[in-house]
Amino acid sequence: MQLVNDMGNRQDMAAIQAQLMADSAKDLLISAQQGGFGFQPEAAEIMIRALRESIDDIDSLFKQLIHISQAPKLGRTPAALVVAPFTLDVATGAQGLVLALQNFRQTMVDMIAAYDEAKKHYHDSDATIAHGFSRTPR
Image 1 (cartoon, rainbow, N blue to C red):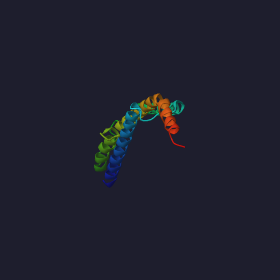
Image 2: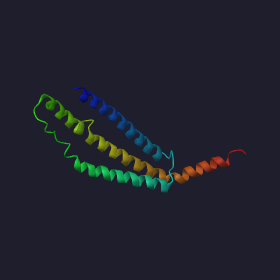
Image 3: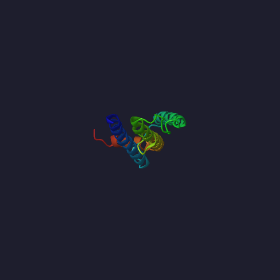
Image 4: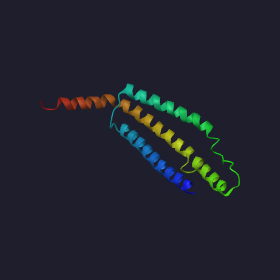
């Protein structure tokens, strides 16, 4: 039973970390939309390409998730009756693997949107910095 509790605690921690990452991606997008930063277009494209490849990998993984989205057949022992539903919940529950992957995918989509937006502001932010340097007393 301790193993089940330990796995639940790890699952909670992972959910918290995933939420922090999702919130950071949304904050990044908001900042980019408000012109808070610019990103060199070539560098942004490299990041976007890597994120799109990761999204493709996750999309491929979703096709495999059908196997873990079913309760495992572990028998009728007392341990099996505890572990089987727990295992299914780890896969498909409110903090399960399927939802975590869906949320992670959305985080990457938000990051792509932020980098796309930041590319638009690169020249503006570059000009602002250059203007600030030209006003600096020598």
